[in-house]
Image (cartoon, rainbow, N blue to C red):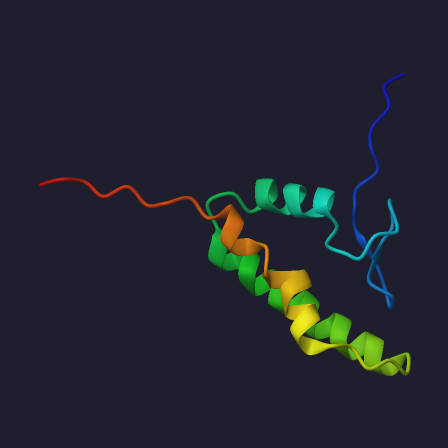
Length: 91
């Protein structure tokens, strides 16, 4: 019997990780997302922007007042670390 790790997915409406209970996207979810969206960084940014928007809406619905700057850092601030530098061909 093989043991498969449980995916690190968000639990709504709190937006905590279902597996480790850290704020989603947790570090493992970030790694999984980078692998899933490899070569499609714009699609990943759009997906995470959509998730951030839903999280903000959910947290307001729970009566919270999410700090928008912190939400941006949490959902999108780590993306620049995943970008590969472009290689330019010499003519």
